[in-house]
Length: 473
Ligand code: UDP
Image (tube, rainbow, N blue to C red; front, side, top):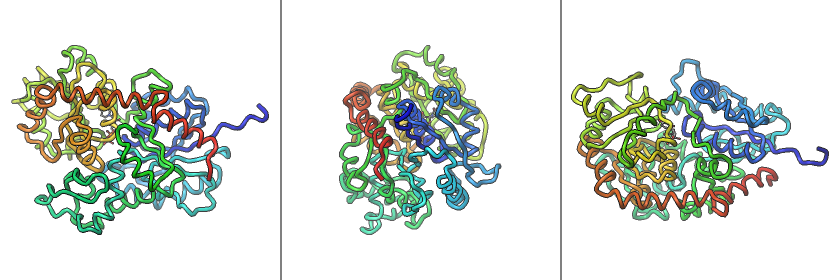
C-alpha cells in the first residue's frame, strides 16, 4: 500500500555448528513472526544436513518472505568440518567466504531491501568495521553465556597479571582472582576450555578473545540470556557494549510470544523419537537424561566409565550416543557384555533425541550434560537439575556457575571414573533431590517470567524489533 513503510529485511548468518544454527534459527523464527523479512544464510554443507534431518523447510514455509540462502565455506566437499578442524574452517571463511560475502552485501545480492545483518558474534572478522561500502548496520549474536563472554574479555588482564597461562595439571585448582565480579569463584579449571594451553598465543584462544573484544564494533550485541540469570554480568558487558539485548532463553521466548509448539525442528541429525515412548513408561523423576551435545568427542575408555557409572547408579537412564561421539569411530557402539543386563533393564540409548521434549518430560529428574549453553538454558527452562561434565569453550565456566552460583546441580568437570558418575547421579537424583528440584523450579519460574509480557527478555526483544525497524547507524 502506498505510503506504508517497507518491512525490514534481515540477513542472519550463524557459524556452521548445531548449537549456533539452532539458536540463530530460533531468532530467525522470532523475527519472522514479528513481521520482519529474514534471509538465513548457511554453508551448503550445513544446509544439506539441516534440511535432510528436519522439517525446517516446512516450518519456515509459513513465512512467505523467509528464505534460505547458501554461501560457500571454501572447503573441499570431503572435509570433515568437525570442531577439531575449527582453525581450518575459520581460515577458509576468512580467505574465501569473506570477499564473497562483502561482494554480496555491496551488490544487493540478498535483495535491495536488505536493512541489516545479524552475524554470529564469532564472525566479527567477516565484515570490517571501517568498510564504508557496506551500508547496512551489522548486529552481533553470541550463542554463549554472558559469564563466559565476560571471562573471555578478561583474558588479556589475566595474561598481563601473570595469572595465565595455566602451568599444567597441578595448577588447575589455583584461584583466578582478577576477573571482575568473579573474584572468589573461578579456578584455573573453570576458565573457558580454550585457556588450557601453555602458549598464550595459541590460535584458538587468540581468535576467540579477539572476536569477543571486537564485539563493541557491532552496531549492537544480542545475547541468549536473561536478566535474572546473569544480570550483574550483563551490566558489566554493557559498559563495553552499551547497546545490548538479552532476549533469552530464546526457545522459551518463542513459545511464550508466538507458538505453543514444543518441538525443536532444527536438527542436524536424525531424531529418534522412540525414547519418548520409553520415557512414558518410567516413573516420574526417575530418569537421568545424558547428552554431551553435538560436538563433544571422547575416547572409548571414558564412554565405558560413564556407562559403568550409569548402570552402577541403579537409576534409569536415557543416553544420547551420537554415531560420532567416540573418537575415531563412526557408528553404533557395542554394549560391553557385563553392562548388557543393566542397560537393557534400566537404559535407553539413542543417536539423537528430541532434547527439549525429553527435558520437559515428567519422567526426567536430572540432566548429565556437557554444559553447552543451549542445553543449559533448556534444562533451566524445564526446571531440571544438572550434573555438568564440560568439554570445551564456554562450558567450563557455565558448569561452575550452574554448581556454585545458581546452585542448580553438581560440577563433575575433568573427572569421569565410574565411581564418581554413580555417586553424583545418586546425589542429584536421591540424596539432595529436594534441594536441587527446589532451586531448579525457582530458576525455571524466573526464566518463564523473563519471556512473559513485562519480563526483561520480552521487553528487550520488542526493543530489538523496533531498532531493526529504525536502526540508527
Ligand atoms: N540436541 C538435541 N538432541 C540431542 C542432543 C542435543 O536436540 O540428542 C540439541 C540441544 O537441544 C541443543 C543443541 O543440540 O539445542 C546443542 O547445543 P549446545 O549449545 O548445548 O551444545 P553444542 O552442541 O553446541 O556443544
